[in-house]
Length: 228
Image 1 (cartoon, rainbow, N blue to C red):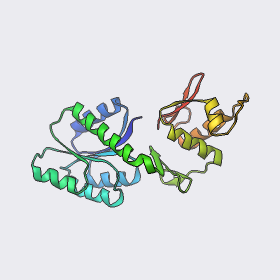
Image 2 (spheres, one colour):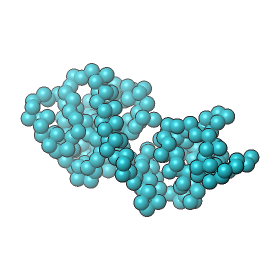
Image 3 (cartoon, one colour):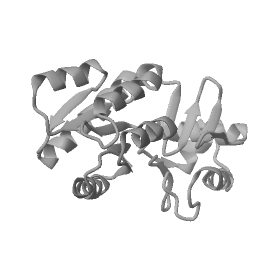
Image 4 (tube, rainbow, N blue to C red):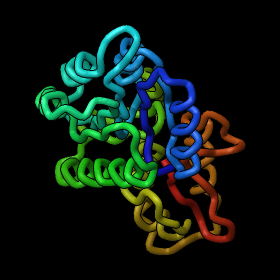
């Protein structure tokens, strides 16, 4: 999964088109058809970016942007609008939007803008990252605390260490031997299912469906890869 996006948009046709394309590009896409629902989801979900329409049925996107910035200053926001006036663009950027795309737009340009936002965001946060998130799960490394949809998850010390290691090596195929060396501190690798047992426990506690994992995937005859 390349990222978790929130689409705040009320036009059904555009919602369907964007959802299909974003999911085809390996993004998880949540949808809010009103500004208030967008604010609520931005507050409750662990997101990587927001795609925010200016023209919404209950409030305009500028108010949504302002509200999100009151509780999250770092979340990338890309505003989508049929308006093209310079004033609107300037206002959106002054309220905290990171980028602005005028309708109608080419899908390839939208994808490029999203990738640029996520890349910029990851570079800005990497040097001092003390929190990680994927799906509804958040890890606070200062407090050594893991929450799932706002509820604290009870992990053992070794389960927590393993999870943090996976997150820091996101997208890498990591062998069982490497995990035994780097997480457990072994310099010899006994014939043990220790890694598999701990991964199974993490899946039970964190995966929506542990039998069909979304986050910690098995690499046959090798080890695991974290795709959260």
